[in-house]
Amino acid sequence: FLYDSNNVTDQFKVYNYNTQLNASDVTLYYLKNNQFAIYLTDGDNNPLLNKEIQFKINNLSYKNKTDSNGRALIYFDLNNGVYRVDTSFAGDEDYLSISKNSTITILTTIDQAYFQEMSNNFVIIHFYLI
Image (cartoon, rainbow, N blue to C red):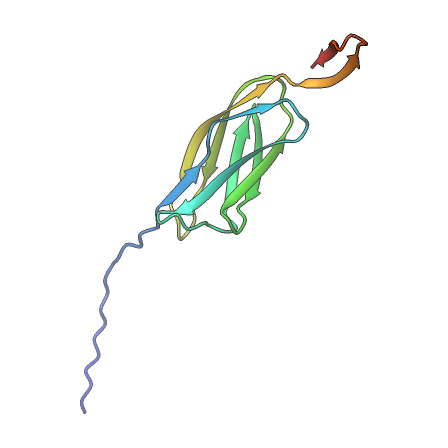
């Protein structure tokens, strides 16, 4: 056998996989430690595990990693109002970056309510709003 070696140089491009970010608008009642969740999947809806997600809400930034279901979660305390949430995945060597804007609406809640039953079967309700 005769062997003739040649060096071959070529270029190729590596394509990253598409990603999907599910970050829905939500309406919540005012509570301490409200939560907002997103889901990160590949182009075939397979959850992406251990990917860092950036959240920006009310001029504050939060980071969390996705779990085995592709879910990343943040907890926050916001007053009544409407807030824009910017959510993003920066991408990595395997997956493309993606971002999405959502709205969180925080409604007033009843902080304390108590009832007094009257003898004539009427009920008086006292509400204290935050």
